[in-house]
Image (cartoon, rainbow, N blue to C red; front, side, top):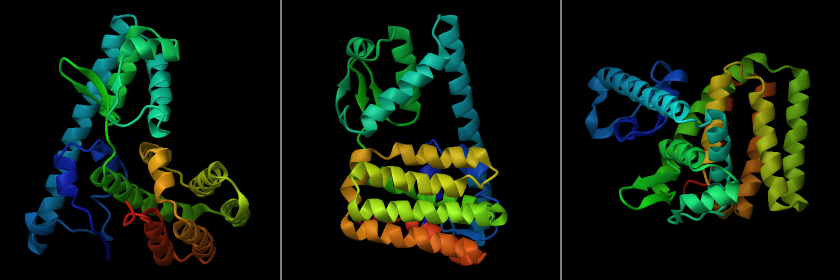
Length: 285
């Protein structure tokens, strides 16, 4: 039985935005996972705790969806554009991730209107979306501030991504064909070349391309979307900080091993290497 060393209880009860994502991925229903809940549930109470966690996650998911729907209704009623707000949220999120908008800085809406050529209402709706995702925080009588991506938050995001990507890898294993394996091998080669002689940007693009090529064979596109959303939540500056030469070399080896485990149809081996690969670098942060 695989073990997930994650205090899901704390993550869910503390309002993780991924409560619904964990349900969609079937984390609470997968028998191969043992949820270690520490002192909050002994061995005999694990099944009961799993039910309580699932119910808590369902409540969080419904509440989050209600907030999102209500926000979009308010925006439409006031003349705002939901599609424009989503576009702006992505642009601001990108600038936060790359460090252009630094952690802890205050966001003046009038400056954002000029910077992104947007209306006050669309900027406000975009900031509301980013607050829901944890990128900014609205403080009473002061405005919006870029949230700090601390060690605990990084660990939570990466650990949840590891659970989801292991689940996706199992689906990929069932469907990837020889042509797909060859494409994935080429993407692994591209990343190895980028690590050897490419720029940091080339390494990031090649790494993304490898995971995209693998996840192309996962039929659960909602699950794939969640995984890439989780990837985007980690600031680029933090990713670059942890990508030491040793970690990059480990990543090259992991990519080739993933291809090999897929080729051999070795599910336990695949799950082990994917889990290790996604969690790589946790000890550095």
